[in-house]
Image (tube, rainbow, N blue to C red; front, side):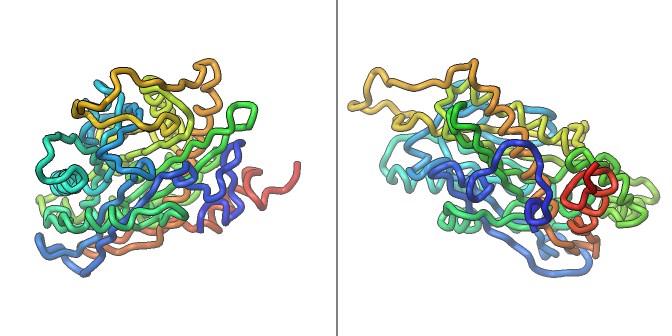
Amino acid sequence: MRARDHGIVLGRLQPGPLNAITDVAGVRVGHTTLIRGEGPRVVGEGPVRTGVTVVVPHDGNAFIEPVFAGCHRLNGNGELTGLEWVRESGFLTSPIAITNTHSVGVVHDALLVHAVRAHGPEAEFWSLPVVGETFDGVLNDMNGFHVRPEHLHQALDGAAGGPVAEGAVGGGTGMICHEFKGGIGTSSRVVPADAGGFTVGALVQANYGSRELLRIDGVPIGEAIPTSDVASPWDAAEALARGRAGGRGTREPGAGSIIVVLATDAPLLPHQCERLAQRAGLGIARMGGIASTGSGDIFIAFATGNRGFPGPALMPATPIVHEVRMLDDARITPLFQAAVEAVEEAIANAMLVAETMTGADGITAHGLDGERVVEIMARYGRGPKAQPA
């Protein structure tokens, strides 16, 4: 169940009809989820708890028609390929894919294969696909390289608008968040009509954070559910690492990562997209994220309010000048609020939807119990069961 299914309302702005990134018209999401095996980890065999998630930015061909985009790094112990060209050009020129840390290369290459198909085998072109990652090596045999090119193709071929699957799906299958089960989450916000009525959608792959820092709507949920009560998968991984290394453990709870994708139908220019992307960090902070040194917290925002741009290759029929629209900078603050709230709720949805999962070496990441969260919130005067003052 998602946050609002439990009666947990985060922020003040209203969500879109689906409360998902696909509320931005034309945005499509697809997943390939890989789950098989159980028991001790055997590198190359499993257990497997991983996958691929893709975000397609509009209803056309993203390899041929770019859109304006910007990006931001909160802490850089992670990867989101292609960002140098996003910063340099201001364009997103591919779908966005997210997977595990050691599968970035294969997914990147598979996206290039899709780009070749989009242009035709004889076309002269180049592409710098955007592929992100977070670490799923606690629950998944990550060094076994179980993600294959066909898994990216399946996710792209299945990408669609409408409701978005959340929790332990796609790239989020093996992820851990605040020492509970994490994964994929999404949410959206619509700014008021007098501010333009624009939609901002967020999709996260949440795999960061320590238990004691987790907060929902300002309530210290992590303190109320300590690891002595609901065990942390990181503690189990640390104990296993100490045993294998003769007492020298290396696991640090909170040393995961989060990738955030923001989409909007507002007519933003690249520098405005970058400013929007920065606000993702505030949504993470509201949930208790601190961007630890071992975390890769990387964000990208794209805007579909300007369309019809040609691809990067110079074509004879390409106009010399393109007309674009721009939101008045003085009116961008409501979009910032929308981004913060959408990211905050997307993370909450990822955790509340994800169910308990046991992965490699029998390590278990427990799902966050939504009803227990509601009861804790009530003690702080928050949530659907809070008593009136």
